[in-house]
Length: 227
Image 1 (cartoon, rainbow, N blue to C red):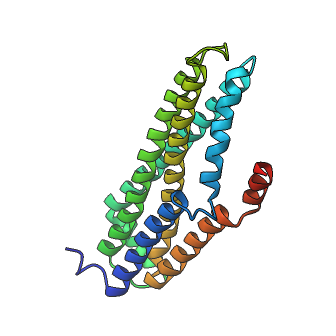
Image 2 (cartoon, rainbow, N blue to C red):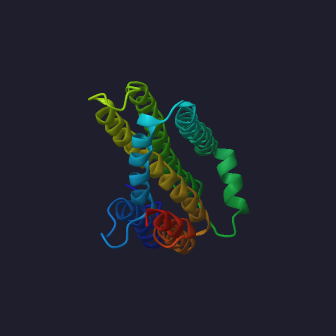
């Protein structure tokens, strides 16, 4: 279907980008037992948060934190929608695409540029769906938190707190997946300058994400606190 629009280097670069996108996401969520990612390490803190929540009085701080998390997901969802709208407008505007083609240092047909822009939009659409679902899950979490009894001796207190923690973790996972798609959407923009550029930027993006999850200063701080 796209064989007439994309060259073999284009297919290889796109394939590499998709493999890196999926592979880094999977590795971050399923890290080796001896080298946990920041995302996985933070799950224990989310569970500890909900345990502390049971006995904390008043609970204004917890309400502020969960509201802040929801605002973050709403912001990124709105930004993704705006970016998708711009991408769709670019694809549908032949004159703009043609002008972009004329300004690029490499020769490219309008249909090729439209297809490349479409891939960026697909990444953004995936991010939007993840952010929207994350926002909804944080909403579920806030309701579960409200249902946690004020009495720590209540039979359901820690059970409900544990439920809230797991929903919170799932919401954070969806949010991280959305950010992951945003990173690779930005990387895919480099495809306009050639397949080789896309391949290089995709590798750099994957390396940056892995460094932040497995070799960052923040990870060292989190591990120190765990110790």
